[in-house]
Length: 90
Image (cartoon, rainbow, N blue to C red; front, side, top):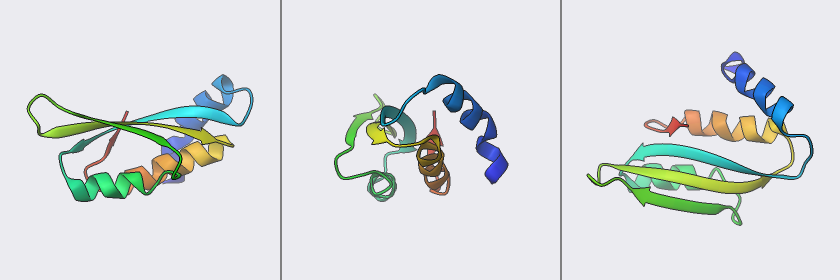
């Protein structure tokens, strides 16, 4: 799975020039409290998490703003999210 995020790592290293940095993560999940809880625990307690239900009520979009200290931290969060069934990273 290490190679899965190589392209993202390259883009992040080119675009983020200094840390700490406020990074915005975006995910889509099916409307499910368990999945939502699994996503929330990936982040620090002071992260800004915004949920928005789709008009049909079947999906939730999640936007999270969190202070990160490195590209490795960003990649680690995406790896944890990818391990949760039903999470789509944007």
